[in-house]
Image (cartoon, rainbow, N blue to C red; front, top):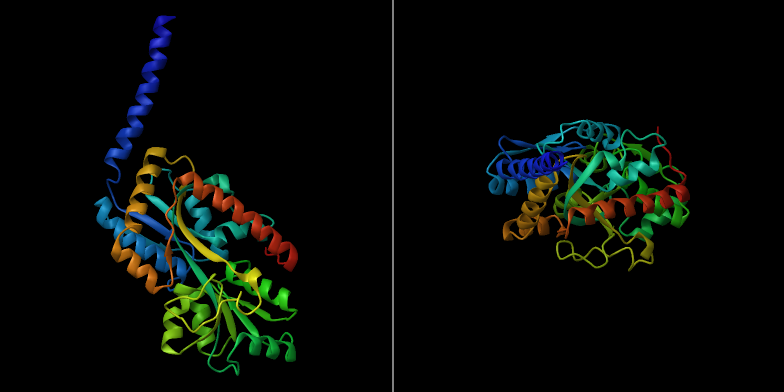
Length: 322
């Protein structure tokens, strides 16, 4: 009996020691952050901001790799099936939760992932192309009611957060838009600029530079207060739509069963990066606010809550995707 008990204790110590050793030696090679969308969108921007800082603190290259397709589910399925060793991470944002509400048979489950750390929150902005004869959100609503179903709303994909936010606003105001899904927010923004689409809801990092350059007109922002970056743009709450007040979140997730010691190390490194003045300056330029999580479990709970929120929006707007 003593021999058996001694063997069991030895095994437990062995597992504990191996986990600590994994965290101590990690990373021993480059780490990849998979972005589920094309370059130029908010997710891509956040991955590159945090990736550059993690490269310094981890002592290994952190490489950003874009894998767009199926509203982010191509990349999500890929990361879910990757080795749980901390070398393949994914930049997750609101669509990661929303897809579970939109798709009857999504290619992943929340249980396929381990939350690592939140990075930042950013508001969404409703923007229109320079060719559209509107100057305010009220103008857009009026024009949309005069031309029901004629204006084209671009998004980064069916069921993505931009699509859901646009559909939610259309539902609240009783207007109708034609939806044009793209393979990412970057291409969608370029088509709004070029006049091939009329408007879009987009996370701030996707469009803020275009707004500053005058290539897009910003009509409203989903933040709770105006941004110092675009102080002339009113909030939806100011304009009578408080239910549109929301921030998009960004964070890192890893395949399920990634050792908790590695998750903990990455979580701490991300939080340290968010305290860096350089990172804070880069986020501020994109209308982003650092959003450090207390624990990885806090992020996991946020994803679960957000999924339920989008279930309610999907039920109200009757959005489905295959």
